[in-house]
Amino acid sequence: MFLTHVVVITLFRRKDLDGQSLISETIKDMEGDVDFKRTLNDLKVMGKKKMTLDERKNRRRALDNLSVPSFEDFVAQQQVRQGEGQCGAGP
Image: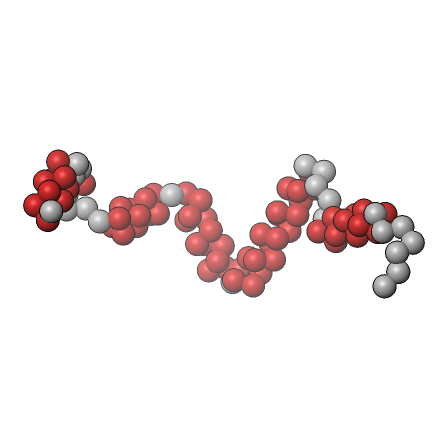
């Protein structure tokens, strides 16, 4: 059984990846990635807390452009809908 596995692994092994690791490939990709460089620079300049706040603001603005309600508005809408189905029912 072991010999069968060795044969299968040898048959389907990608020769073009010999000697390369996922980590070294990822690091090489990150070094050439413009977005990653910008994010890393922002992190150094602003710090983690400020950057997280800016990301939240940007995400919120993007959702506003899509007419997606805020989380608070969504929860309020769901509570109203659930309340409509319980007409007159008390605790």
